[in-house]
Image (tube, rainbow, N blue to C red):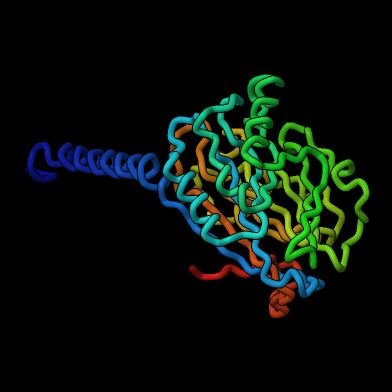
Length: 315
């Protein structure tokens, strides 16, 4: 009979549909079970050309977007990230918001006592920390402060290190994604140009705050908010049309993930630890990061290449 055995075409279609469905189930299982647990440990050498000798080797740990209370946020991943941060013996810890998911403090969000007991731990709030009411936000701030975390809102804090021989200024803005940031107020009393003897680090929940920074002013900007896209379909660090899940989920930013250099200001966008919207991660694993300060920069890199200042250290 022409065309082969009867029903052969239908069987091929069934096999194809079954194969596609099976691949889809495997991807769903990976995105819901495996990737949210696949903690990525990142270490960078941060080149600060005018770094005072006393600050050589200072380490800053960065964690963000904990989303306690959201289905799919793995408490085991949060605890492991904090254990890793402690193991680095950082000089300062930076936490850039979204401690809870629904805007209300949860018992499981009390994670930072051990870290803050031994290390200056600075925090800014994220949009989810404002999701409920002003009273709920005040409760979040009070609970973090009770753990020893310094919650900063449009102010700066100078941290003295190495027995007082060096210091770093941390400029901390309230959540830019909700328009609560005030960089001018946060920098009040600081010069608008780079300080040769005192590096300055900018902290903000959403990375777009870097667009407001004076050129060449900050040694580093640390942010989160984007979750690295959470469901990532783009190979690029900047936003592309393929970032539809990130944009639709309210995580929109021109700086989707990783390292950037914006008007001479190095920026790192951490993919965070929890999840938001849907309990899935795909090609955007949770991250914990550490930055070791040094005077050395990579002069072989172009002036607009973030790797000139931020060099990843293999684990």
